[in-house]
Length: 310
Image (cartoon, rainbow, N blue to C red; front, side, top):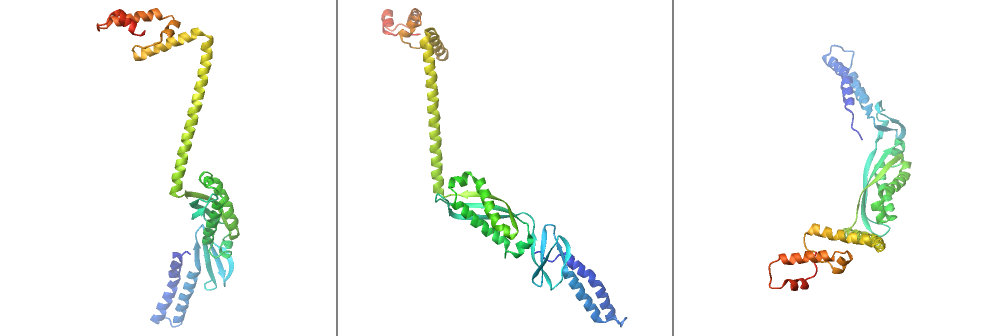
């Protein structure tokens, strides 16, 4: 509840100036007509007027009770009440208010204990109901939110809470708003901040996710091999019907191998014969042998003991 506004004290000081002057005149004896009681009465009147002054901010509404009965809502701005007969029971804030709440060790539908933290955004639409229909609307909203959160957790699976938070937020907002609308309070939205699960379950979920990634990798690899095999099958059919293309492909493979490695490549003689390169490869091999230093063997024996090289 707001404290007394400084304007009340200023007003009391201003209204007390005539009383002080009357008291000074009475004490000096210059004017015998004005009694001392007039100054005291003026002080009392100034105090009553100052005490009746109230100022509400733009976002506040004052619930005024007269002899215990609701009278009206006052504010914002300057207003007066009747001292002793009237009092301000509540100062209602009309702004959007945030309330954090949580549910600890609550079992989900698949019996997993979780700790859930959420934030509630709400606003008082009817200050009269908020003041008269419930004892403490702030505490009531907090307890209603926690109860609704536990109820929703008990009806949801853990996977839904981790992946589908938006649906749970909407469901919570509807449940809480239905309970608080009778108190003149409207729930704007509910947002789940965090869902905490046991560490043992976190490790198990991490292992499960890793196994799922490995499974997907193996599936992708197998599918790639299947596609490669299919392409090889198509190429084999093409080479089967076109031997010239097969020879050109073999020659290209030999060329690429020699160009990249710059070394001698051993190739079966049958392949070279099909490519009509047998004589040329023999000549090249003989030249290679003759260029090497003598090793104690005859050139004819060396040629016969080695395979054809290219």
